[in-house]
Image (cartoon, rainbow, N blue to C red; front, top):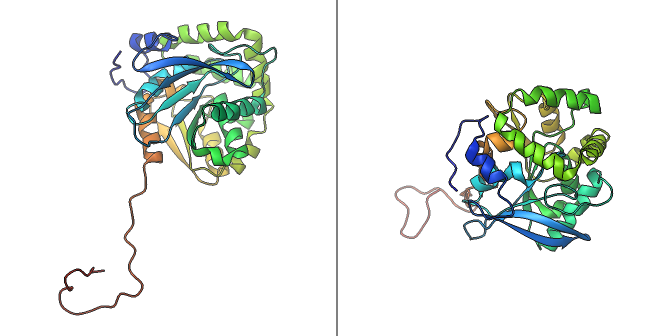
Length: 299
């Protein structure tokens, strides 16, 4: 399946079919299961083009799964191996009896990295997944080469279940309607009680403490029409992380990783691109008149 580039904020029938395809292969994405921390865990993955490009791990939000991140996975797979695991109780991963809090999900994700024997990864967390990614980056800095916080929650000015649900309802009016079947499928798989419990964990999570401990180079990505992550909170997140810079995607709402995959993928590639080699002048070089001698360097 080949996806056509679409303007930010769009999500069409081709993207929907791709999102709901698992466990069938589609657009270079395949499914696999491994036992992680005692749970049969599903991961949607793309092998990438080969070479030594660092892997990118996509971490979904609290009511969803790998499904809505598949457009971003496909966009990144031309240059990087990509993995989108379903967290415990979500998507196609086994259901534990309880709903994990942020620390529990971060510990599980660390165990997932160990199971896959990953080198340092680029960790991309969206919404509640950004909280999990920040917690892991703070606790296991050696495992995280770079961090992307896309639509990070939770803004302290609306740190309550009522505040977050209210903002989410506003966001639904700004999102592409074709995403609705994915949300319904994911909530059905997770069960509403687990979504509610995870929301409770999210609004009680002191995310600022983890953000201040992140050492990896970081992008804070948000859609300019995102009511869940308003500009003041984006700026605060960027200030809290020692090495962070903002990326605003015009026209996108909260699900920026879903409806603007090309723009987000380009920002991630720029973050991971090696810095160009710098020519450092030789300290012992002396000025001389006339052209340089054969085999010598001119500074």
